[in-house]
Length: 423
Image (cartoon, rainbow, N blue to C red):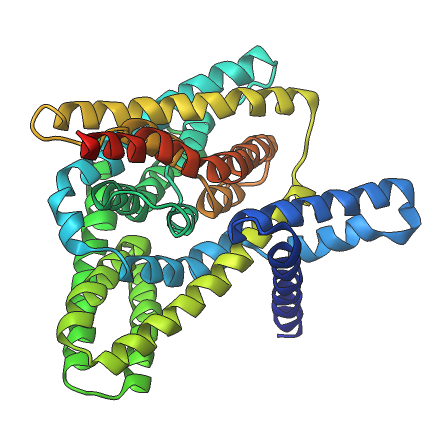
């Protein structure tokens, strides 16, 4: 308990200090500022440690970070609240209109990306003399392919995009992490058992149990919460009901071995659309929105702070640096193919927003989920290599893609809209 209190105090204290420095002086988007300043602070700590070893700054910071299980904190603690908060603000009508395209991106596109990245990084490892087994390379493909809903939704707050394109970006990012976890678990079971034989029946059953089971669970718990919200008008209690909805749904999903992320997204969509419109007074809606906005902002800030600080525990060698440099264009190239195929197919039957492919490719940010999955791998040389390469791709994604996506949207989407409107 003492460790938990200390860790929470440390994280919130650092988040507040770094958030203040960014807002007062740098004025970068909050998530980007937190990652950047935390990384610089971590690297400074390492530099001080090399110059003055007796101070023990680096080992002290490293000990605190190792004490915080990033994977467990995110996947079992923060993720449910972040996904629910994000789903509350997504327009279900816009999502439903583009359901097939979003489903194709979150499933078929994800599998294509997993395969391309996995095979590509396997060649890269072999070229540099690091013989990482193909199954672990495919695991890297599975954990780095999903776009992170927290990162994506955070950037969308600062970038204005057409509603149709925003629905595709938000919808895919909310659902594909759940799908990625399913693929990751299947590949991890194969890697740890030493068997690479594919049993299609078992894989299909696990996929249905995780994905479909999660969606059904989210509908059931969301419907129960909707009924409870509709039968009362007491905003404090209604906020507590939504808080309980997230925690209970995620825990039941864990017990039933279904996808907790998918379950809370479905329940969040239900409450955020039908619940706020049909089961709440204006006063309740306002309090609910304010409550979940605060939860979202606080957890977002802590998560991106942790991502920035994690630089202090990764291992670097010349070979891993080269592979990390190769991995960035490899992941982006695979993302382009994974986006272009479904949009090209669906584009035969319906119109898409101009510039959808480059925006979805460059706007497919990676974040905490990729790092958490990498850190959940069994200890060993393969894990060390994958964590380092994963971290490099995630940081590039947040800092470079996150900083420039707004300019890309203005150039390829909004400029096209303005030209069309003038004509």
